[in-house]
Length: 66
Image (cartoon, rainbow, N blue to C red; front, side, top):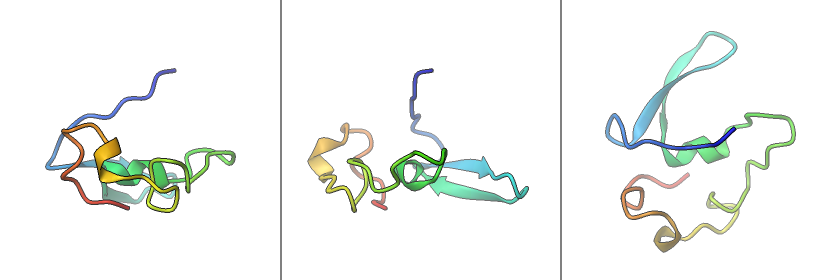
């Protein structure tokens, strides 16, 4: 399965969680959520992983970092 990200809703998407809560998630915040028990939430696209603003594609650079 391919992963992709869209520029929608001013840099955020609505996410429904398994506890039936709903909240607005920033595009870059998607890389900090625990999608799977083996997913690295401190991966290379997070602040903890050392992501730099210039490494992101141009359309994502202006969005908030997480």
